[in-house]
Image (cartoon, rainbow over all chains, first blue to last red; front, side, top):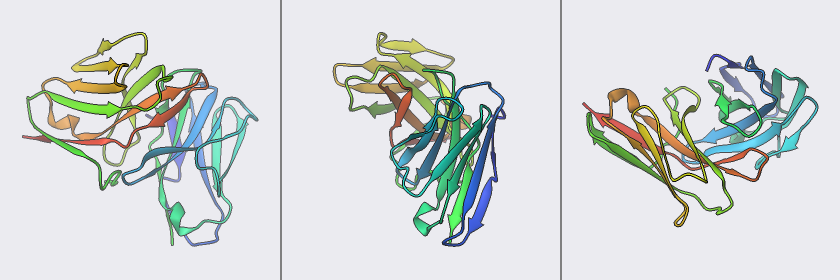
Length: 111
Length: 112
């Protein structure tokens, strides 16, 4: 969905490096989410935000942090990347209790 | 393309046949369910949703059935086409905070 964009689309980094993944949306939604997807494990929620400055931990928040400085932007950071954080990362948005719309994903590889 | 599920259950159907993809959910308090389609290299895409006060909802070529008694959800795709080949996820909403919990996914393969 072009209304939700993620950068970068692909990233290869080394263990111990700090990485930031960006998400932007033009849907005007208040709620934004970061998910991780691993083969055979579906989507797991890392962090979510219901409004600017609102931050909530999801199922697997350890090793990650987020920032929601504007309604349209939600960034995910890996302070010190480790190999088991190699995965597909998806950002999503929603308006209240409603369908979540996903971005195209970021493929992160940590060597 | 991306490999989103190396060990996913797979459903293989002939083009033109109907497909039925099943999902079991665990929380009887779940009140909202969604089916997503994920094609290789792309993010999940909304297909259809259903609320717990309904047991059936139809869209274009797709029908979702909800059986709350046995906590089971199914997605029926009529006249399956090659473009339907993808991984399909069900998701359930638990509590009013719009927290979605996703199932592990099913890979649909359409044979020409």
